[in-house]
Image (tube, rainbow, N blue to C red):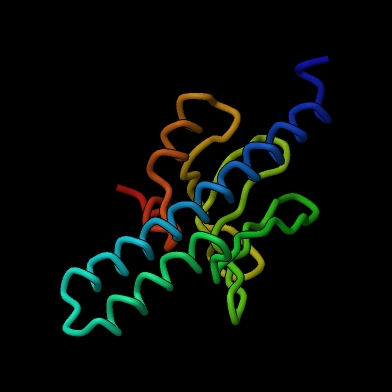
Length: 137
């Protein structure tokens, strides 16, 4: 049963959730680094207090989220803050990861494979909230 289509689709969804969590973690980390740089260059006690408070807020409740929307063929990873934008597409059956071409469709070339453990680990290590890891090199 481990190779059944429904089991593979469950794995694809699970790995897509892992990718969303990694993207949130990357966003929080990059914000925290920025606030820490602001503390180092702060010119007043107020600046230090403000940036310290922002670090705590960001760790508790990030102002960005990555959610999964399920379509007919793809799982769409959507970045949500004040607005919504497509971060990536994942083929439900194969786990292939695509950069978005627009809101409704992926770009042509596969950028990774979530069902392949080596590719998945590479994606999870390199992923960044802004999507730079989805560009072809």
